[in-house]
Image (cartoon, rainbow, N blue to C red; front, side, top):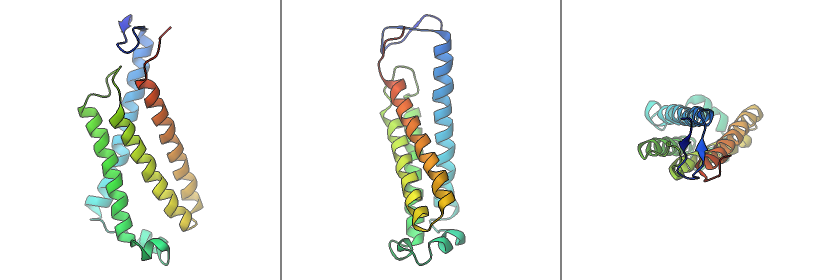
Length: 160
């Protein structure tokens, strides 16, 4: 990739820039595909929108248990996770992973992922699951950093 033109900036791309780009963007896609596929699959396909006993016990007597109901909340969370997964797949199909391409669908996927983590933080906070809140907040923040980095990768800039 030595001397390859970057279409969005007109600057030159060094070999190390190309390697870095592909490692970063590949890792973002791989992490997001695995995370949202297995999360959604577990809730939607494996559990059939029914919350496991541990989740039902965790939310017993809480607001979530009375409205919308633990099973409904579990299913809705699975749908949000499936939406994040489908957005990542759509981004791949649209070729957003290519250098110089805008990445609005991938950014949407990351935004939906942030919403998913926010929903889980809300539920864990409600039931005083402080260790879960701490972990989820870390995932929330890491996804936010990923979103900003993907925005950076997609933005036109002059290369020195």
